[in-house]
Amino acid sequence: MQSAQWDSIVRYITEELSVSPPERPPERPKLTASVSQPLPITPPDSNAHTPQDEQRDVVSVSVIFYPGSTPDSLPSDLALLTSDDVFFYVHSDKLLAASDNGFNMMLPRGSMQGLTGDPPLLFVPEDSMVLNIILHTIYNMSAAQFSPTTQAIIDAVDAMTTYGIPAKTYIAPSTPLYLHLLANAAINPIEVYALAASLDIVELAVGASAHLLSYPLSSLTDELATKMGAIYLKRLVFFHLGRCEALKRLLLPPPPFHPHTTCGSAEQTTLRRAWALASAYLTWETRPDLSTSAIETALYPLGDHLACKECRRLLKERIGDLVVQWAQVKRKTTCRSWLIRVRVGRGKVNFRGCCTSSAELAITRWACSVLPGGNRRHIVVELISTSFPAASDR
Ligand SMILES: [Zn+2]
Image (cartoon, rainbow, N blue to C red; front, side, top):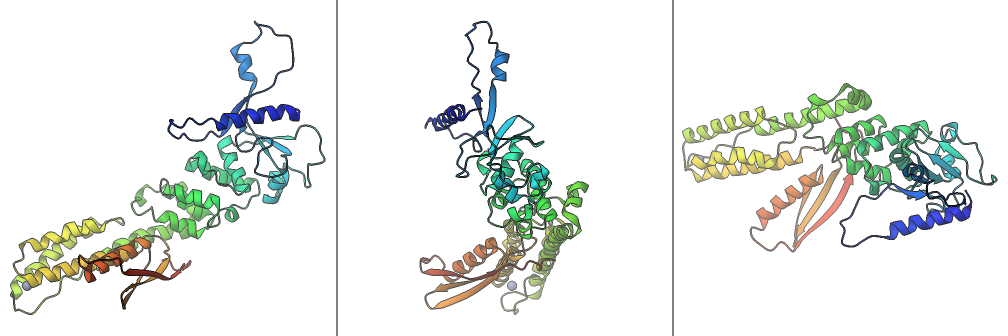
C-alpha cells in the first residue's frame, strides 16, 4: 500500500475519533478502527458490489498503533496481524529492545529501515486485546482506557514470556501495567495475587491481598494454588488464619473488675459471663473480614442491662480498645508500616500501625476522645515514616 493511501486512512481514523457528541454518555474506547481499503480503479459496475464484497474490503487497524501514529517519532517499519485480523503498526527497534529473544525469534537483529515498500507483516497467535496490552507495555503506555478483562491482562503477561519480554521488569511498582493490575485486583483479587506470586512481585501481591480478606480459601483451585506456589500460598493461608487467631486473642480478656463501691462481685461476674458468651459467638462466626461495626453490634448490647455506671464505663472502654486493636491487625499479607504524629497545640501523640485504614480509625478515635464536640481544625497530622518490610510476613 502506498503512503498516500495510508494518509487517507489515517485522516479517516482521525476524523472518526474527533467526532464526540457532548450529549452522549462516555463509551468504552474502541480498540480498532475499521477502514475501507482503497480499491483498484476499475470501471463502475452497479451489479458487481455485494455486501460480501464490501466486507472483504474492510480491514481493522489499531486506533493507537496505525501507520503514522505518534507513540514514536519515527515511522513504523513493521506490521503485526492478530488472530482476529487486526493490524498493528509498530517499530521493530522498540520490540527488539524490549525482547531478549528477538520477539520470539521472529525479528532479525538490526534495523528494518533499509527495507523499501510495505512494512514486513508478521502473524501473531494472540488476539487484538492481548497484543494491544503487550504493545502498550513495550511503549510504556497504559491500556486501561480499553478496559481489558483481567484474564486478557494475564494472557498478555503470559505471552510476554513467549516474546522474551521480562514481565517482572514491566510490572515494577508505578509502571502502567502494575497500576493497571492493581486496579483490577479490586475485581479479581485472587487472579492478580496468583499472577504476582508467580512472578514474585511482592508489592503487587500485597496490594491484591488487601482485597482477599473475604475470599473463601475453600474455593481456591488447584490451578491457582500451583500458579502462586508454596510460599505465596502459605502467606495467604496464614494471613487468613492469623487474623482469625488474632481476633480470638483480642476477645479473650473480659472488662476488668472495679472496686466494690457501686456494685458487688455478683453483678461484675455476670458481666464477665455475658462477655464470654458474646466472645464465643463472635469467635464461632470469625471471618478475616469481620468488620469493627459487627464487633460493636455484638458487644455493646451487653451494657443495656447493667445498672452500675462504672461497669458500663469499663465495658465501653474494653470494646473501644478491642475495636482499635482489631483495626490494627494487618489487612494485607505484608503491610507497609507507618508512624504518624498528631499535634494539637503543644501536645502531640504518636500512632503506629500497619495500614492506612487502621491509621485513620486510630486517629479519629483519639481526636474524638480529646476534643469531644470541639473544633478539630487545629489538629496537625505528620507522616513520620513508612517502611516496607518485604520479608516480615508470616
Ligand atoms: Zn459495677
